[in-house]
Structure formats: structure tokens, C-alpha cells
Amino acid sequence: MDTSKLSAAVAPYQLRSCLISRKGQLIYEHYRETNTANELAKINSCTKSVLSALVCIAMEKGLLPQPDTLLADFYPRIRQDRDPRKAAITLEHLLTMTPGFNWTEFGGHNSFPRMTRSENWIDFVLEQKLSHNPGEHMEYNSGVSQLIAAILVKGTGMPVARYAELELFGPLGIEQYEWEQDAQGIHTGGFGLRLRPAHLLRFGQLYLQRGQWEHRQLIAPELVDRSTQTAILVEAPRRGGYAWHWWTDSYIHPDKDSAVSDLYYYYARGYGGQFVYVLPELETVVVLTQDHRGKQKPVIEVFRESVAPLLVQL
Image (tube, rainbow, N blue to C red; front, side):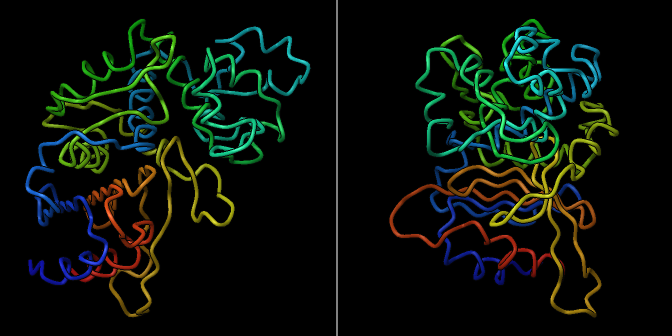
């Protein structure tokens, strides 16, 4: 493969890393600095997709109940909430960010920063009022991810990171990582995980292979499919849809005669330019990572504008 066009396309973004695999083979690898490959770095909200994987594994093993299970089964006190709608929130509503909480992720009273400054993150989230009926509206909410992390602890009887070591990180050969915790010792479900770019590529490859890794089925194929299938369309300025803590979208090739005209993909997305794209039709995984050094071109559209048009030509 001639990688010169890819190199030219991503050069303006000064990416921290860009890794692309096709059919399980690494076909492109770029690091802005030579030591980046071995450094652990924040993946921010890509943590949510890792959490989704752990939930799927726990469901398959019978450690967590089915997705239509009520949140009140884990936290009975919400049945006494002034808003009776809270009693209808399910685990799937949490996974798809549709429980209906009035939440402003990066500002205002009900927000991710205020949650992190509270004494008990779970209490903070459960006490928030609802602005929508459960299942009606997707509102991005890292507090919901923390609820899921806490539920995973209840189901597995161990810390989230330990469960990841046993069922996900270990099999994938991820021996080094860092993961933040809240004041109660629950690992952060919506952010806070640090991995290497190659770790993210392995994670994406696991999903491309529908949960199989080296002849071992880590995640049930049907749960891989369900967890990455669009559950609800998102509202502008976001595009595409949302699944179980994965984003979904499609790339429409401007050339109508192209062999790949409408390319569906799903992806993990983290603040500041952290992405893991899985493209089943092309048997391809793309990892992009970034940091905030100097004046750099925004990364948010690098995949659609600069990478996808070249991938469909390969």
C-alpha cells in the first residue's frame, strides 16, 4: 500500500498517533514523536466504549441481568423519587444515554465537572431531575456512565479495572494501564482510562472480529452486534446515532460510481481527539489520538475529510 497519500492527508492535523489495520494487519502507523508508542495517555470518553465491552461480557456470563432490567432493581430508593418516571429507567436507557436526566455535560448545575466535585458521584446523578421521559431523548452524560460502572461492580463483585484485567485487558495483552476512581473507589466509567495507541487498535480489532480474539470468544457476537447498532439518532450539531456507549455513523462517498458508496461505521470518541473507528465492510480499524500541543487543526473531522476518502479507494 502506498501510504504517502495518507501521510499527506493527516499531516496538517499534527496527530499524536494514527494507526490503521486492515484484515488484521497493520497497514499504517504514525507517531508524532518516537516515544508516543510506549506512553500511556488519556483516552477520555473512549473509556465509555471499554465499559460497554465489560458490560456485554458480564451479561453473557450472567453477572448482569438483561438490558431491560430497571435501574430501581439496583437502586430501590428511586422508586420513592418525587418523579415516578425514574422508576421506569432501565439499564439499556443508561447504555444509550436516554434515561432522561436534565444534564449539561460541560456546564451548568447538572454537569460532569460538578459531579466530580461532589462527595458521592452516584448520589449526585440519581438526585438529578428528569427533563424527558426515559427512552425519548439522548443526552450525553458521563454521570450515567458512572452509574453503569457502579452496577458492574455490584454484578461482578470486584473493581471495574480488576474485571477488565481478567476478561478483557489480559486476553488482549494489555498489561499496563491507568484508571482513575471516584471517592468511593469506583473506577470512572465515562473517562479516566489511560492506554497506548496500540491498545486501542487491539480493542477495535476485537470488535471488528465480533468479540473473538486468538480463537477465544471474549464477547458474544450477538452482543457485539447489539451494542454497536444505532439505538437512537442524535441531535445537531452531532451527527449519526448512538448505541451502547458507541457512536454510529456512515460515510457517503461523493463519487456515486465508487465501489463503496455508503459506508457504515461505529466508533469510540474521547475529548480532545481520541477515536477508535471500526469499519466492518472494509475490515478496517482506525485509531487517532491527539493532545493539546501548540496550534493544531481540530481533529473532529479528520476521519471523514481525510482518512475515509482514501480508505474506500484501497
